[in-house]
Picture 1 (tube, helix red, strand yellow):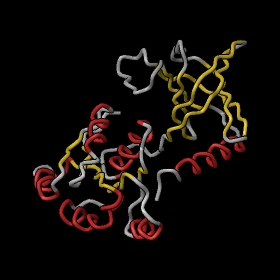
Picture 2: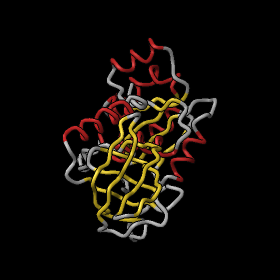
Picture 3: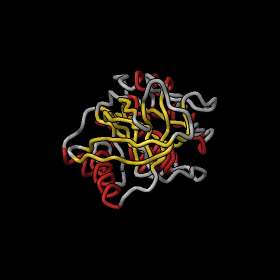
Picture 4: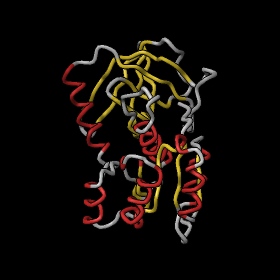
Length: 238
């Protein structure tokens, strides 16, 4: 999905957020970066409706939060602390102020893009997606007739999955996806909705991927999916 709103990156004199800004640019997220608070606020105020999320160094998050909210008129959920996890007292204070998402030393690009674009989407009235696609790295098997193909599930929700598989299956293929969710083995029926061969599909994955929509999921299997997804989301929530 193309996000038109941008991520505002507030750095301090240490300049530790610069590399993060470059990573987001490579992930096709619009970025506005500066290491001077007043400068970047002035820049952002020229187009306040364009700002969808604000990333700040984790050790400055509580200090800067009131100024960000006051100057940019954004909800607390748009602010994302990034870096070393602070002590429990600061985490609890941020949580009580309404901060919802965090990135503690984000090394994985999928996780980085997930949290930033989720924060953007939650402040965007035009964003219609209601289901979070949680980044994963799960080995699985794609079954199509008598054939079994190894795959990697790179994101997942209770209605579908993004699956890395080479060569990709054609859109419209009926498949079964076998995966292990932390000890709970599931086999889910589904249909390939799109592949990387589609001209409008852009991904950051290393290999070919297909988008799968689950079909006729049993209640117990859906409950297992939700348990797994809830646990995975805790990595990114305060």
